[in-house]
Structure formats: structure tokens, C-alpha cells
Length: 352
Image 1 (cartoon, rainbow, N blue to C red):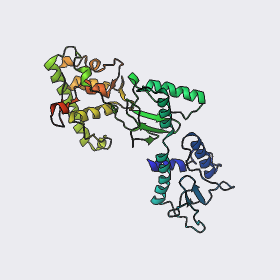
Image 2 (cartoon, rainbow, N blue to C red):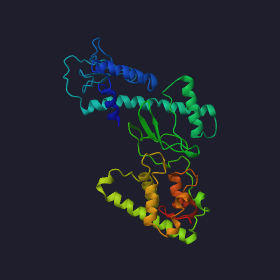
Image 3 (cartoon, rainbow, N blue to C red):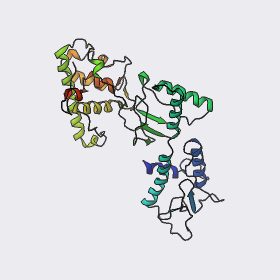
Image 4 (cartoon, rainbow, N blue to C red):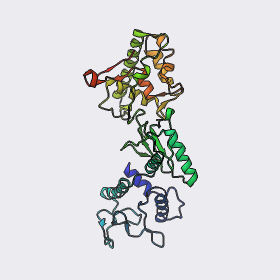
């Protein structure tokens, strides 16, 4: 990802007119980014004719280095707290070490300076001083802040139902997306991508709920007691079989999410299947996305009387969409309360 970021910073010729010099274009772009996002971002120095100055420095880190005519760092030329001697330096192609040096500069800035949207969220939450701020409240606050200050760089969160955050959040003006905890909106480290949406866990929470609490006493029409248990078992068997086929299929194995080692087999199956249905990574299975699930229920589950109202049974929020939490709950996949039962760490049970 970081090399991609560097490429984005260096390859400006595709978005500027041919008669605009590369250095001037990069300088203009990074100055804009410095104003909007990272105050300490590296801004190149250009000669009067628009070419790159052979010595480039980053005032915040104290590093200087030599560059080739195309502006790319020359391997081995970086020095700290002084300017390097660049005259006569061999202009070889940028090596891996030079790329990683550039990456170091960028990463150092990012690690030292929390992103603008994180700071915005913190300020807004400090102002409200409520015990918990819902996504809807934060969204309204962000929109008002953007309106008052006429600032396009303000991050406005995407919200799911019930005051939760969508598991994928994006900042349009930068092209970055990242995964969050859906109950707090807090970013999950290591998940950020640029110009594409990451695959996120739609049920990642700081304070997990227990799906069984919602469905323990919920009635599934035409499917009482033992029939319901038989039905849920048949559905999970079908999903498990499909997951095994997907894992062993070379064409799809590369797209499989890394399983959480703390999950039971049933939990892994449901997480996997949800990710297959949630094509747009919205954190909800919408009306069109749910059609394959309905087909699977009709073809591979029994008793058939349990199929008819099952999707409605799962949709406890009655919003015509299913969250991962709802799918886990209606399939009866819940972890044992191990501290109370003392049972094994891989057990799970079906709630009828």
C-alpha cells in the first residue's frame, strides 16, 4: 500500500497537462495536501525552469537527499541534518532502498500526525461529552462543521442502521478507505487502502453484543422447537460445504479472508458467507444481495416449512437488510459463556 502511495505522489503526469513540468505539478499537489491533510508532508523544491532541484530536503524529519532529473530519490544519498554532495552522483534508477526511504518519510509523518479525520472525531466527541456518540450524531456534527468552515476535507462518517457505523469508511478527497469498529467508529489499525475498499468485518465491535439474546424467544412461523434446530443445522451444513469448496478452489482461495483464530468453525462459516453476500462491503446484505441466500435455503435446507419466513425472522430490525449480527443470531451461532460453563474454547451451540 505504501509503495502505491509513493507512486501516487510521484506520478502526476497522467493528471496534468503535458506542458506542465513534473516538479511544479507535484509541488502544487503536495502543497494542497499539506493544507488539507498533513501539515508536514514533503513538498519538493523546483528550479526556475521547472525541473527538480538536485537536493531535496524534508524539514520536519531533517533528512536531505539527491534526486534524479525525474525527481526520484537516488539510492544511498540520504543524510540527516545536512545537505548531501550531489554533484557527479550517478543517476541510477531508483532502487528498493530508495523507495523504502521515501516510504519511511511518509510513514514517519503519518505515525506522528494522526489523520485529520481522527482529530475531527476526537474534537467532536470531546465537545459533546456524552458517554457514547452514535454515528448519526457524529454525522450531523461533521456536516455542520463542514458547512460552517466550508471545508471539503472534513470527514463525514457513513452510518448503518441503529446509530452504528458502516464497517468501511472512506474519505473521498484523499481516496483512502479503512475498516472501523461498527459501534464506536474507531479505525482498525492496518486496514487502510487507497482507491479501493478493504474487506472489513461487518460485526467488529469494541463492545460485542450477544446475538442469542435477540432470537432466544423469537418465533419462526411453522418451525417450532426441534424442527427449528434441524433446519438451522441443515443450513450450517450447507454453508460449511460451500466454504470448503471455496477454500479448495484455486480461483477463489486468494480472495478468502484470513479467519479469526478465536472464532469457532460455525462462526467462521457465517463470517465467510456474509462476506460473499455483501458484495459492496456495506456491512449489510441488501435486497438484491440476499437472493443467493434465499436460493440456498430453498435448495439445501429442511424442513421446507422453515424456509418461507426465515429471512423475515432474521431481519429483527425490520429494515429489509441483514447485518452480520442478525445473520449470526438467526442461524443460532453463539459462543458459549465459557467463564460460566467451563466448556472448551471451540464450542458453539444452536439456540432454538
